[in-house]
Structures are given as structure tokens and as C-alpha cells.
Image 1 (cartoon, rainbow, N blue to C red):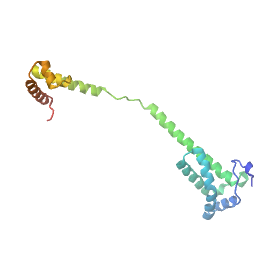
Image 2 (cartoon, rainbow, N blue to C red):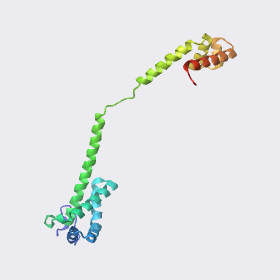
Image 3 (cartoon, helix red, strand yellow):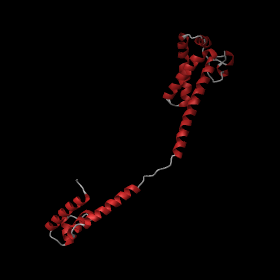
Length: 194
């Protein structure tokens, strides 16, 4: 067995792991449970140091331990300790996850760059606005002079009834009546409320 400082990944190997792994290679579930108890915290710790995300680290650690279960018979004691073998698998899996995540982000970034920028299209709104404006002007042209002036001052100028009456030099009651009649004609002309 290797000493702590000679281990390729800097981890010591608790006694009996090799025998447990051999038993796991033969399908011994009890041996795997004991092996899991020893390996899981170290595998998770290594993966977490690489990924820095707890949820992803838990997934990768589970994948590693499943791989240990399935590949236990392939372990070769002459190439290193059980701990070194398992932690090498864990490190590779964690790096693979980082690369996979980076590749996904790169793909999304490339796709975003290829997609043409489409600014808000103002043309339809401008056309509709102009058409409505022209329609309103035609309807305003159908009003009497007093109605058109009163409505224009009130709605476009923001004047009150009293101020409109002063501007057109007409009695307040007359202005109110003309505006009411003018608005009714505009509503009918524009087809509002139908």
C-alpha cells in the first residue's frame, strides 16, 4: 500500500479497500455499501472543489460511485491504490461536466450571435398612426368652423371650456353645445362605439 505522500492524488487509502473493491467486482452489495460509506464523502469533496455547485456535485459523485460499482472488476492494484483510482475517476467526471457546461454555453453564445438583431419595427405603428391621423383630419373637416376650433383648442391645446369660449369669442354655453355636437359627429365619422 502507498504512503500518503506517494499517492498520485494526495489521498491515503484506508486498509481493506482493495478487498472490498474485489468483492464489489464479484457483485457483493454489502461490500459496496461499506465501500460507499468510505468513498462517498471524499468523492463528493473532490467533485465539489472542481464544480463549486452542490447539486451538480451530488449528481457527478453518484455517477462516479455507479461507475465504481460497474467497473470494480477492472481495477488493477498494480497501477495505484483504490482511493487513487476512484478519485481519478471522480476528477475526470468533474472535468467532463465543466467542459460539457462550457460547451453548452459556447453553443448558446454562437447561436445568439448568429441570430440577427431585430429591433422593434416602428413602421407598422407609424403607418397606422398616420392613417388614423388622416382619417381624423377628414372627420374634423366635416365639422363647422366653431365646432372644429372648439374641439381643436380643447383636445389638442388642452384648454378648458371657459378658455375656449374666450379664444373663439363665443358664450360658454354655445361653446359647450358646439363641442358636444362636434364630438358626436366625430364619433359617428370615426365609427367609434359601433
